[in-house]
Length: 198
Image (cartoon, rainbow, N blue to C red; front, side):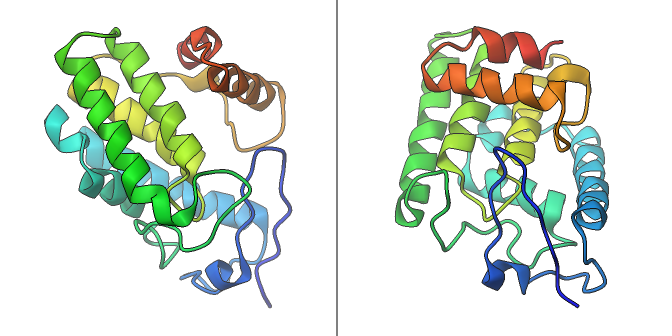
């Protein structure tokens, strides 16, 4: 029995090769997968809450990968490694490292030069992370937790609320989030900043 997934708007399909790297072979439905992935995310949040991670450490490729691995490493063999196939969103697989370095360098510049307030730095980083789409799956959840790590651990602010509801299931919160992302695609970050603090 294989993993059968249906996809909602904005979700990245998982290739058959990637599905074959599922570590928990009893998972067969989207709801079961979502449940196990949520437990992994909660483990990653607990890990973040137990340590004070310097801002400069979070602005490295190794931290970006480690966070994804801590979120999904008990579920997927490919967790924490850059994707090896192109997707319906994201840069070409061969450009992931270059684009990520550009994002992290930009974040350093924004911080050093106080280009934007802390919330906006974290939100811009999250948005660019989604556009790069470094991993086979889980990029939206990873990018939001990455923004939370930046704002809480790096800047000492409160975690974002991200609309206060689950963004996995179809509904008003997910629709508002996708709309805010599309606005950010057009360089209007106000809706995404507002949504993150609802």
